[in-house]
Image (cartoon, rainbow, N blue to C red):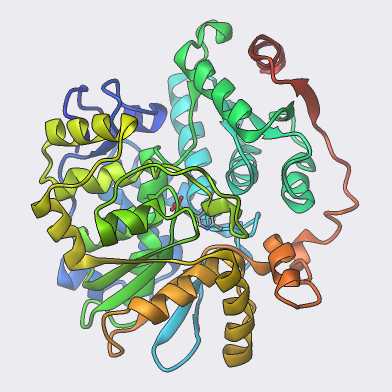
Length: 462
Ligand SMILES: *Cc1c(COP(=O)(O)O)cnc(C)c1O
């Protein structure tokens, strides 16, 4: 199994290389050259297996023997032992045929833990084997930073530096990052906004000379291993509800499109999926593209579902590559146009997407309404991201007979502000986060100055 670029011009890479590499050299994203298949019998045999065992079986073909089976099983088992629910991602039935897939039982209460718990372990394994060390740098306005820190805190060969905008992330989100006491974890509060942090990150990846030869690794969702880890829960949930003997549908609160693209991969591997619904907040590029063929950037809007606040959905390129029947040149041309002006998809690829995908956009007022309405009907308190999915699933599902699985991407306690705004008294943190508000914080405030930030990273890495 080799990995190829969505723009067709970069060299094919092995699994190990693709995990250690960010963007392809032609600006594209890496995808597997062939999509491994799960037969009817292989899916049927997964019924009743543990999440970790399903995870091993789904991911093993992508790893391609580059980690031996016993070692990989161990990494997978350790990654999912950090979750507080034995099912890892339990299904919660809301009504006759609508289910929530609870993806928030990991260390930081949002679904990014599922991929980052494993990615840290895979990176550490490859670095140990090569006798190398690496530096991870990330910029975060919320979820990714804390999930990456939790995923790397035990990694001997990695040092992680996460930039967040000083005084511009919620207290819970900041504390989830800054109270982790580990020698390889460094939080940097930038005196600037998220875009300043993002720009410094980009510059650091573009010119890594400040690290004097140490590898810089990205853990954002362009990393293939994150997509790979996310395929698993689609298969696990589908099998739990009757696949391969019957179809299921999924509704996915979406932003960078990593999550729903993983679902699409599960479908291409053989999971019988009737429909994927893409739910967005007011940052609706995915909905505008699917519904109106308006593939264009619009100004960023700050919403009640901040982990879905994006201008561009980077992983959508991976789906475009499939919709354009793997014509890398066509994808490159489309994305080049999109960079500078409003673009549109060609007719045939758009028609292909519309056979499987529907979309819906939910504004802030509706998010609050949905949180109240869902609680009244089901007694569940939804977080604002999940609320977009709940509404989208109701509005655009293809049929009532196919089980609809809405992905609950975060725990409501993590986004308590929205829940309080919807009229609830607040949400207690789960037991394993007891004391978060009293724990000692550790972070360094730095000016939005690239040279100072890079000097800090170079001096503090081990
Ligand atoms: C990151 C995130 C999303 C969006 O996921 P994508 O893979 O970027 O589409 C949705 N909800 C929550 C809570 C998130 O943290």
